[in-house]
Image (cartoon, rainbow, N blue to C red; front, side, top):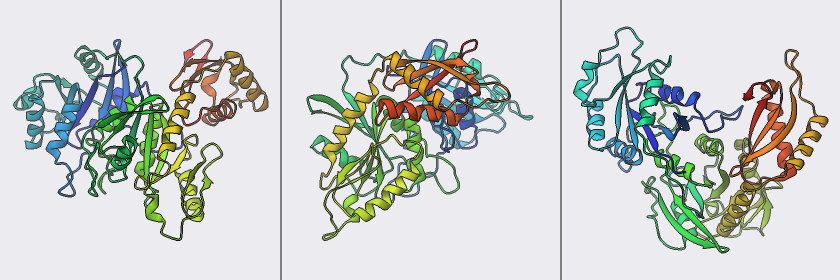
Length: 459
């Protein structure tokens, strides 16, 4: 389904991220973050009153750092054009200013549903509604994102004003989304995969502002490739992702089956790359780590014979120095230890090395994502895993996984039934995931688990 999109916009410190977390916390459809990782949430699938929609947090907007970066006004336009409904958040305890007025002026011209959300109205000294009448936004909601006041009414109205989710086409192509920081080589790889110049390629960061797409045929399969704008690092005084520029990237992740996360070989250890990998994994999408600009690390005389690098499940060929590759791969293994299932491809769009390998891996990952495992096999493996390593008791309650069924594909989803499963430690859940991977593969894709107590329903 193609879900409608709701964007939260407004100035910093108005409480946008708090509102996002309040709306998403109890309505999340994306599996929660893995333990032990730190990353910002910018996207959530919300289900409310029989409606599903994609909620995108555009908090963290910063001023442009250079002439080439999009102006704030352009980024607001981008948020407006990419959304079906817009939430303009202001601090209900402060008088609005010219920046709030500019945001309101632009959204009023969009002809889309717009709700003015007055946040922090639980604070002493919060202003009455009429103080915000000058913004021209008639649909006002008084909320406290911190305490949840007014949020349910806001959700009801959002659901009533959204277009219906559109059904995807039958026999749709395998969709690959190119994700990464600006100037990491997405457009170059896009052009190489497409074998024609579909996108402008420049040394300046941020050339691609929209999502370009192209359909190709590979091994008699239809493949759609989506090229996205780069996601920028936030300013030094801010935390998280510059989320206005990430709107269409988040939509591309949601739309794609497999994401190619491009990592610059000349600067591979970036926290933003890890955050993007976490967002992709949380969304349940297949992942290929594509190490770009490898040719910039090698020179004439340095090139070695093709060697194999990576984990046993993720080995690929490349030309270059084995010593350099081993160092970089060790760093990638450390930085992306929360997605050990993701294959790594070392490539160069300039030479075209290993570009077709990406397409081969994508088809292999799709096969894993569509895999159905017999219930008898699942329960045989679960029984052996529990017998070999029983879960520990917690406060006198002993978790007992009893049986498992596969409930979905793309990504594979398993429901484990038993008693006291709410007491299972996250490390034991990770153990079960590793056992399932060892037995059934699931190459290049997250696998999702739900746990149900016999008397309590789904956890």
